Image (cartoon, rainbow, N blue to C red; front, side):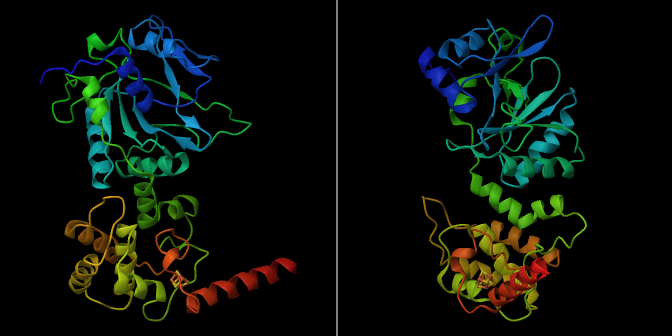
Length: 345
Ligand code: SF4
């Protein structure tokens, strides 16, 4: 396909959109020796043009506050198998990751977030769980921290792609996911590269209870510790969701409904059939489509393969459907009261 002609200004704004981070500091390295260092200087158009023209490499500090524009995994050897495993596992979770050939050895896998970026702690939690699943838990993730604070004013920079001096050598360029050859038009790729919404991270963390597993390894991961188990029929939130459908968080809602169905002894195939009927009532916002039959099957499988008991009361997907008078709510209050009493003794 013919390369689209773009002005330097158009390339610059596209580059800024994809590789944004701290505006007052950047990283660089000596292409001859590889020695890297920090530059405390504004990230001006001149700095970025120097990078794109191959004069001086630019390294981006992705973390701004607790937000990041991307999550990057640094596979520092030339074995593509791990990269392919990561891309495939990420795709399983509906996360599109893009492969970049790095400057010297290895590859980077980039997950781009939308214009608002994503919470860095969530991004790192999701990526680290995927790395665990492909048996590469020690692989470096950028950003390396969850947030900046007075003790971590900058974080760590990652070398930005498309350093002009290395592009003709097929380095610092993005690769097609099947042939592993550089995209012929890197700018067209960057322009259309799929991004991930933070809500997808929220859904993955909640459904897989990744935070609970990572932070509380010795506890029963099937239920957040702050949430009492449920020992009666469908709670009011689930009844409301079933009756009216939902507008947001369809996958998490589907998962929670499936958890309740399983808890009540409903066979798996009946639960899936009920969820398909339920999905027809959903009214997704923002031009999104109704949850697909395959997604319903996926969520029901997640719910049925483990012994979940919690209701997700604190989840942004479930809490808007909460109803006064729910027995779980009073259990939570009693628990809080007991804990408060305990704290006073
Ligand atoms: S307390 Fe609210 S969110 Fe939790 S189970 Fe009851 S109705 Fe649902």
